[in-house]
Length: 175
Image (tube, rainbow, N blue to C red; front, side, top):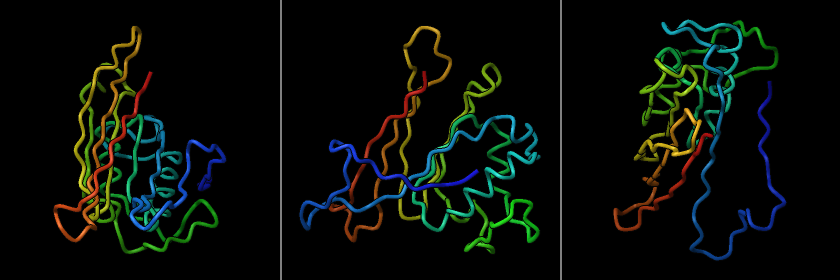
């Protein structure tokens, strides 16, 4: 399992700074954590532990984390996760050893509203202290779809005044 920052060569998807008033950069990780990696009571298996460790390993460079296939156990496991000194995945040396994921991402939205019926339907958005989240779950309206869409509005709190705070909107659709 590895984390690779990706850059797109698509001219329609660009981060090119056009002038001094360009939007600030936001680092986002999206991760399908696999609902089976953590039990309903929050106990992790090897796959769940590795998923949490990868998020932790990169938390120092992330602003927003979007998770798919979560449930109550994932929420508990993430918010109580602390890396062990004896990693069973070689090469993982955290820059955030003392921090918990809850401390790194204090702004959180978790949706478990359908996980009793559709096990893999949970989702979450996590943000650092520099970003505020407003999230709305939307019915997909697609016949045969079990998962809702997540509409996310992110407010960048790094701006110095309320009038200049930057808002970003994104919708994640699951079909």
